[in-house]
Image (cartoon, rainbow, N blue to C red; front, top):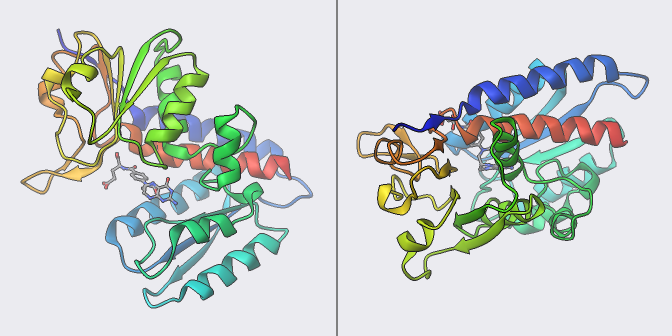
Length: 281
Ligand SMILES: Nc1nc2c(c(=O)[nH]1)N[C@@H](CN(C=O)c1ccc(C(=O)N[C@@H](CCC(=O)O)C(=O)O)cc1)CN2
């Protein structure tokens, strides 16, 4: 039996179309929703993501203000820009693309963003709100995973969910969100014993470890939902996930591909957070 392949690209398009309609009706005396996009340095992947975010903004009807700064920009200069954007009434969301160059402290920059404009959901106040179940911005990749499952009619309540990876951007927030959906959650990492056996207990397996094709069919229970958050290059330079797709597709009940799985949802949820920031103002 072959798994259902979850089409993240199509679901992301649907979300952007819904947001476009909403923005058309929302735009008012408050002016156009506006996202400030800050990119520092020359990371090629980051440049692609930022370009795609700006294109998504244009599609949905969000104005984007672009700050593309050279690698040599100092931490103080980035912090000064964030302070300036915090103060501006016509800026509703601030996005600082990660990773920042090594001489800039990511955490300090994130903590400087006004939590009400933190559309990435990385600020400790938003992370705290998520963990106690209060309203706030939820980081885009984990929010996208939940939306992907909801729109694919995947039941989460009461299911056994195993997450591989404990990063602040994906592993920890997706654990909180799966708890919110009433799943039983296990977070695994590099020191977890018998990893493949733990994963094989999962009804829903979420993989975010950044190792190309790490998860093979030995990790997957027959019929399980497999969500692949990885973006890697294989030995031939081809884009691939953390899951060995060809191997797992025969065992899983549903699976996300890479590309066109979770990735596009990250950008759709960023758009959703921008509209939310605008509505809240
Ligand atoms: N400030 C942030 N920085 C980073 C985030 C983030 O959410 N906020 N996440 C990642 C990168 N990322 C968004 O910024 C991101 C990654 C991948 C995709 C995506 O659509 N991927 C495509 C493939 C694209 C390709 O060809 O390379 C897919 O999976 O289909 C979107 C956004 C780190 N930094």
